[in-house]
Image (cartoon, rainbow, N blue to C red; front, side, top):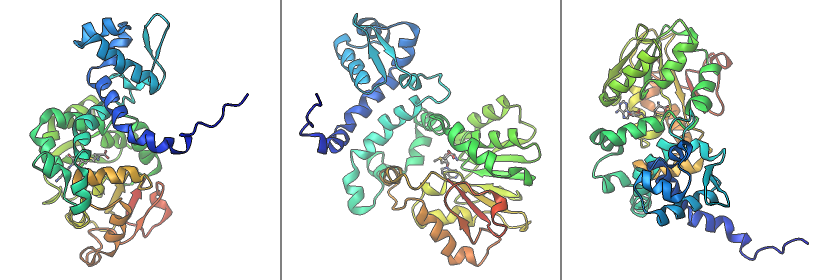
Amino acid sequence: MEEPDHPQRAIAPLLYAAFGAQSSQILYIAAKLGLADRVREGHRTATDLSRVIGADAAALRRVLIGLVALGACRESDDGQFDLTPLGEYLRDDHPDSVRPRLILNGEVHYALWADILPTIKTAESASQRVFGMSFYDHLARHSEVGSVFDRAMTTAGWVRYRFRPAVEAYDFGQFRSIVDVGGGNGTLMVEVLKTYSEPNGIVFDVPRLAEAARQKIEAARLSTRCEFVGGNAFEAVPAGADAYVLSNFLISWGDDEALTPPSKLPQGSRSTRQAVACRMGHADRGRAAGRLSLLGHRDDGSHHARRLRKSKRLRENPSRIPSTSCCGRIQPHGGNPHCRLHLCD
Ligand SMILES: C[S@@+](CC[C@H](N)C(=O)[O-])C[C@H]1O[C@@H](n2cnc3c(N)ncnc32)[C@H](O)[C@@H]1O
């Protein structure tokens, strides 16, 4: 016999969302305490786990039951917990680990979202109120938070689902030199240089990324073709390259600010200069809203593209920045010979 429709079914999606904060905190606790890794080591009961982790057994059991409800764990009749295939992504050593992202969200974004209302009313960055400084200054000031952010930028499938498709679809081999502006620890550049033997690369980011990038470049044995340069894209970016990549970068800034880094791209060798902007899919409006809480700006990415196209400053000097742009899926260079700015979702 079919179960009658639960009377609350119609409003269930709203209720799930309303309780989403609890779910994300359960996942944060699991990530922060490294629960998945401990379970993997064989600590399977709440009592055993609480001993190795240093937690209250009864309270920890509630977290584990929460993880069961979220589909990340299963519990056997004798009270042993195990990871489901979904829960495996909580492991720190999983190539697509979501652990850094969960810690970042739990320790940074959660606090910003708790203070979202004034941002909606005034567009002031929540980061200014909560941390007393801009988001990126906060990362620079607190190195452990910065490291978690950097890892979050390169895990959770980032390489496999964002960087690899962009690298494979776009002909980076046509360039002799490429600068990745806001290139983080160099993960995207390493993928580019591993795939194309011709170009040399510069990873350009704020100075705090120097050591992480050096390690990444060295581990990939690319030190002869790639270097890190620290600086501020709002002041100047390294000159002379054939191509400038702005991956998931312009979207970090407010409407007016976003025009500045592209306008700083150096002039010269106009025929070959390209700006390749790989961005997050702007169809994901949830992410756009997330940016709002973080940085207090009012854009979802597509607006930036329109503004870049219309900008008088940039139109007057098209060699600096592309006058047209391609939105949508990855747009290979060959698709439009007149296209200077390639926006890769
Ligand atoms: C959202 S992350 C994107 C990282 C990477 N490009 C990607 O596609 O995932 C933005 C990057 O811009 C860097 N960044 C922030 N402000 C910067 C500035 N003023 N100059 C250069 N890089 C900056 C950050 O350190 C961070 O690595």
